[in-house]
Amino acid sequence: MKNIKHTLLASVVALSLLCVNAGAQQLKVPAPSPTQTLKQNFGLGDITIEYSRPGVKGRVIFGDVVPFGKIWRTGANSTTKITFSDDVKLEGKAVAAGTYGLYTMPDKESWTVMLYKDLTLGGNVADYKPENEVLRFTVKPSTLANKVESFTMNIADITPSTANIELCWDKTRAAINVTTDIDTKVMKNIETAMSPDDKRPYFQAASYYYETDKDLAKALEWANKAIEQSPKAFYVVHLKAKIQMKQKDFKGAIASAEQSITLARDAKNDDYVKLNEKLIAEAKKGK
Image (cartoon, rainbow, N blue to C red; front, side):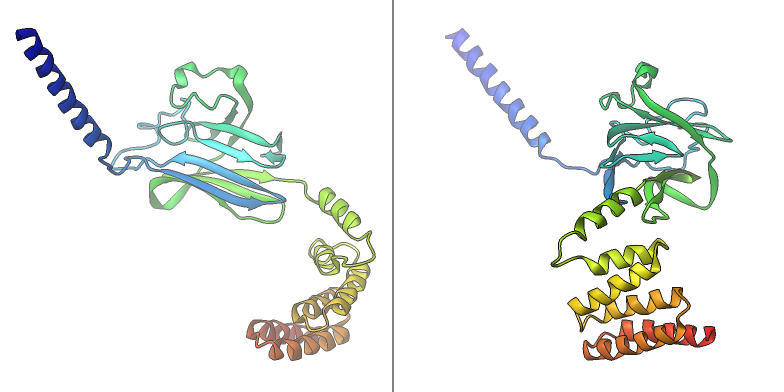
C-alpha cells in the first residue's frame, strides 16, 4: 500500500511539474536582441539579410562590447546570414550566388569583413576556421552624427547595378559596396525578347537603351513602335520626348511632350502633366 501511495504521489508531482513547464512554454516575452529579415531587389535578383539586433543600452560598443581586432558575429544570437540570389561583387571581389555567414573584425581605422561557409557557427568564434572563409576584405568605418540604439543593417544607395550594405550601431557606420553585372544579361534578354514579330517589349527595350546611354536612334525607333502598340499610353510618349531631349532634338521633344500632356490629362494623371511641362521648359532653354 505504501509503495502504491509513493507511486501515486510521484505521478501527481510529475504531472504538476509538466503543467508548470507547459505554462512556462506559453509565456512570450520580448527578445533582448530581436531578429530582422531584410529583403531587397537588386540587379536582376535579390539580397536577403537575416540578423539579430542588440541594443546599446548605455554601454560602450566598439572597443568594449565588441572588442577591437576580434571576430564578431555581426549581430547577436545565431549566425548573421546574407543571401545573394545572383552573382555579385563585394568591394570588387567576386561572390557566387548563395547564402553565407557574415562575420566582421572591427577596428578603429578599418573593419575586416568575412563571408563564411558554415552557417551553424553562430557566436562560437573560438571555433572559427579560416578554411571555411569564402573571402575577406577591409572597409573603412565612419562616424555617425546621431546614435543608432539598435544594431541596424540596411541596403542603401541602390542603382540598377550598385548598392551599399550598411552596418550601423551606436555612432559607427561601415558600408560594403555591392555591384552586379546586369548589362550583358539584359542585352541578351532584349535580343531574345525582340526576336518574335508580335508583342515585342518595345517600351522596356527603349527605356533600357535610354537609361544606359546606348543607341538612341534605336531607342527612338522602339519608342515609336511602342506608341503604335499603345497609342494612349502617355508614359510611352513621355519616354519618346526624353529620348529626343538626349538627342538634342528640342523641337521634337516639345511636340512629343505636348502630345503626352494631352494623353495624361485625358487619363487624369497630373504627375505626367507636370513631368512633361518641366521637360518642355528645359527643351525651350536648349533651343
